[in-house]
Amino acid sequence: MTLHQLRMDKKAEIRHTIQAGPFAADWDSLKNYKVPRWYADAKFGIFIHWGVYAVPAFQTEWYARKMYIEGSEEYEHHRKTYGPQENFGYKDFIPQFTAEKFDAEQWASLFKRAGASFVVPVAEHHDGFAMYDNPFSEWNAARMGPKRDIIGELAAAVRRHYMTFGVSSHRAENWWYFNGGRQIPSDVQDPKYADLYGPAQPCYGDLDYPLPIVQPNEEFLDDWLVRTCDLIDRYGPQLLYFDWWIEQPAFKPYLQKLAAHYYNRAAQWDRGVVVNYKFDAFEQGTAVYDVERGQLEGIHPEVWQTCTSVGETAWCHIADHKYKTSTTLIGDLVDVVSKNGTLLLNIGPRADGTIPEEEQALLLEIGEWLSVNGEAIYGTRPWKVYGEGPTRIVKGMFNDTKRQPYGAEDIRFTTRGSHLYATVLGWPEDGRARIRTLSSSSAEYASDIQAVELLGWKDKLQWERTEEGLIVRLPEAWSDRPAFSLKVISEPDRNPNK
Image 1 (cartoon, rainbow, N blue to C red):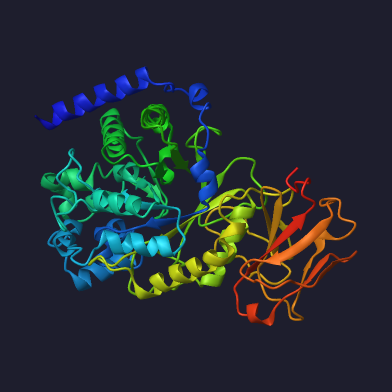
Image 2 (image 1 turned 135 degrees about the vertical axis):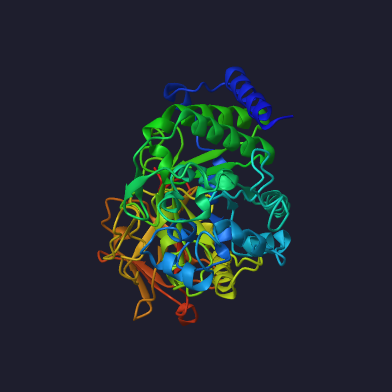
């Protein structure tokens, strides 16, 4: 079968799925979408940026783009290290991307120990190299480099460990990603490699957030839809993450077709699914909003997500990461969950398939904390207020490193059933937690408190409720914890979430 016929058959299959299912390809129909319970309960997932860009491991995962842009650090580094771009292009890294130590079972075991509920590898980044057995292009991991279906292996391992599997597609940005290679002598201009380097359309603006001069054409958009729907049908992911560029006007009708196809497939599978989007790519209520490297100030009425990374700058493996601490990451997880959100935390494996030791350690520290405090995280819902304390989030994208450290006065609330949880994000100097929102005169919390428990601590606590707040004496043994969760038990017939 020719590639053209394969595409035509897939387009016909997509049309049939849309026509036969409960969702039509329009926003009014897609507003009938409901966020699945598994996702609302999940709270914590692992994101994985792993691809050919892990070979140069320089600066960021955008090395593939910037190595062709004269004047950039990547351009100069590439010429000094590998030679001119016309002699050694991005494609020439692929044979070095061997993944010889990749073990999907080991990865899944680590993610499970980290407390993750779901796992989302990047199936295709902007660079056009698919990490799965892509029938529409030879530029994929099943045929080149590792010569393994990385996504297929991960999907099987993640599900064996009873986690939910998702995928991320950044294919849309391939429209312009390699445009710098048109401006200098490079292999981007060789027609033999057009399927990898894409249209490489001219653009202007910031190197990281360019503005293409021309919107994607019908041929590119059809190919994007066919590839993305095939990815859905081939691996059955329950979460589909998109990066930022699909909000472009030309994508709008194709996004509606994509969502209708995906949601109708989910109806056939009888499994709840999630689409993550940024900016205004989807209409509100038709998918789940994602804030990249940032958070929201208050409780959002709909379930939302923040995606961030263990590193402060790059999403992929690089040689000189500046890592966040587990204390910082746990604090952000607690804050996000208190505001009706979910945290998708990214790691970046090396080209050989090993996960850097620093990243493994961070994940295990988070997992250790969740093994004690997970009752205040998983399956919870927001309370009347998200929390209290002086530390303020700098709202919006790319602000994840701009807030001050959390302290003992920063407290975040969640609820589960009739119980209220107060997670304190630092150790008070006198060993007493003070929760001012739960004072004896609190308008927010009128219920009588019957008991206060510390998750992971078996002995009874001394506590009192005064005009100052709920004051709880804490065990000194807990003083080295990054955060700790108090369970507030009220009258059996009273629900603090009402």
